[in-house]
Amino acid sequence: MTEKSKSVLLPMVAAAVFAGLGRMVLQKVKADRLARQNRVAGPVDEKTRQWISDVVRTPRQ
Image 1: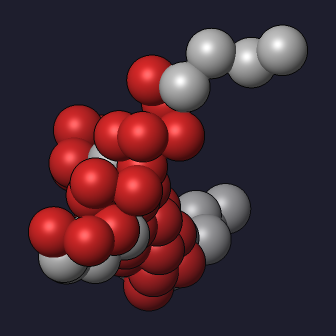
Image 2 (image 1 turned 180 degrees about the vertical axis):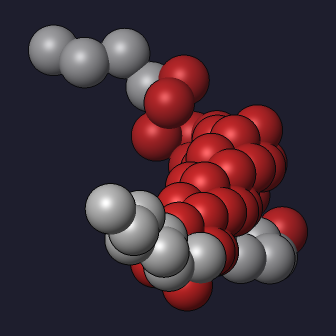
């Protein structure tokens, strides 16, 4: 009996897909970690910074 030749294409494609997905997950984790460390959506001017400081320091009644 002759053996069936196994295709190499399918495992290669599967490996490429999993590698791509793994890379995307790592990029997402790094981006989330960086965003969490910064905690700022954009630059804050002095007037806004003072307003935030006043709101945080004012005791609630």
